[in-house]
Image 1 (cartoon, rainbow, N blue to C red):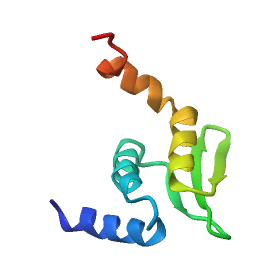
Image 2: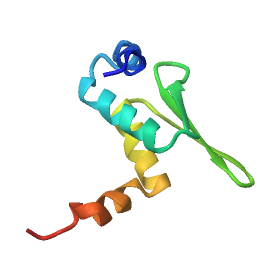
Image 3: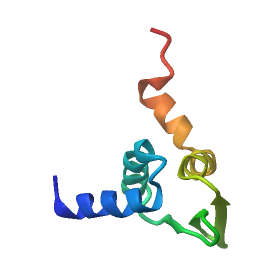
Image 4: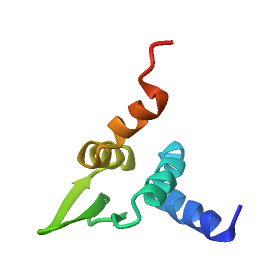
Length: 90
């Protein structure tokens, strides 16, 4: 493991102490979508900014899980996972 990933994990755990399972998901999402900026919003929220050709999309949710779910919807992450074998009927 590299040290940068460990620091990211500790920082995210500090922001999401009730959602430690989502920290790895956040790390994977950031690796797959380096242009998307994710961080703490105001009033205990999580916020993401997705660059678009004509501006940006900003989304805010109260939990990291909710934010990552919404980002999956907005960026097509769910479809990507199904195409990689998640949607097979075995």
